[in-house]
Image (cartoon, rainbow, N blue to C red; front, side, top):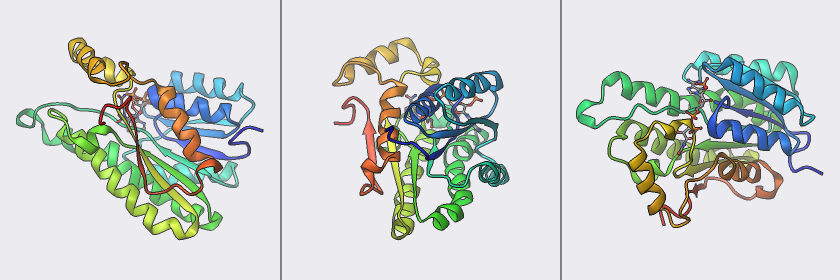
Length: 248
Ligand code: NAP
């Protein structure tokens, strides 16, 4: 018996990187997966086909995570096809790195809207259904940078710290209805997002990590499976680092 058989999951931003890895692991564990993307239509369709090969239902939806009305439409689309939404993984995110001196207002607003407001948009839109079900696991992808801060990432760190406050508040508010909400704080996970970094910086990061390597999408996805499953039914309001010991 697979861990997530019969459950339905929503993953935002899964056409690439960590989200893609999460979608694959969820499908391998028997969950039906609806996932979103913003631009990578071909990659998204290829992923939907791959997920279906696991014998589950899979649907790719182009939906801007920063758009409140789009989140409502997305949840309505899912409920037209599925009777429950059991797992919600808020993963979509962007970086617009710069020193504060050079950071534009537009880049600050864009990062907050895509990374933080998106979590509000989806959680707000799905809340009614989760309350009706009296069950649900919400998993928000934060970052170690949201815990520690990072020079050159004031906008990104603020968005990821905001996710932690939001996660804990939702856990307190909805716990009595058996709705759990946890955050994952990945460290340095090697994806297209980190490919944009200076190779010398990447080398230094790897050397500074106790486990001496960057993480993989699978490292984060494995924790998502656990938090989504009935193996974690007494865990809520937590921020769990997946960082190879980076913050230890
Ligand atoms: P990535 O490789 O750049 O992938 C980002 C994904 O988000 C893509 O599928 C992208 O879709 C989607 N996306 C971007 N903007 C969107 C929007 N407005 N609406 C819907 N989808 C959108 O990033 P990643 O490294 O996998 O990161 C995934 C999450 O983990 C992010 O929240 C990130 O902050 C967090 N994280 C990453 C690391 C790391 O080291 N990589 C560390 C800590 C936390 P398109 O392909 O259509 O653009």
